[in-house]
Length: 79
Image (tube, rainbow, N blue to C red; front, side, top):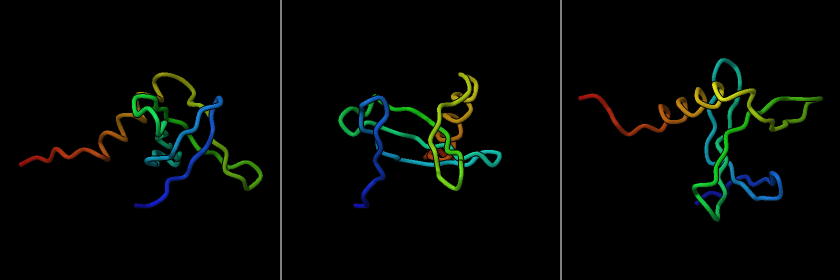
């Protein structure tokens, strides 16, 4: 098993479980390893050649990113 990248947000540990790029923006799916229902989606930006994770702009961006992760990981295939 590969080790997952971990980070702390608001005092809680999260691991990066997936990434997807949409229109040149990298989104990361973060999950709390102690509670799989505790997850969030953030975006990655570069500032002074350093990667920074920031909040999404609004609920619409969250919905779009969540749909992209769902599409990427969908096991349903047309017959």
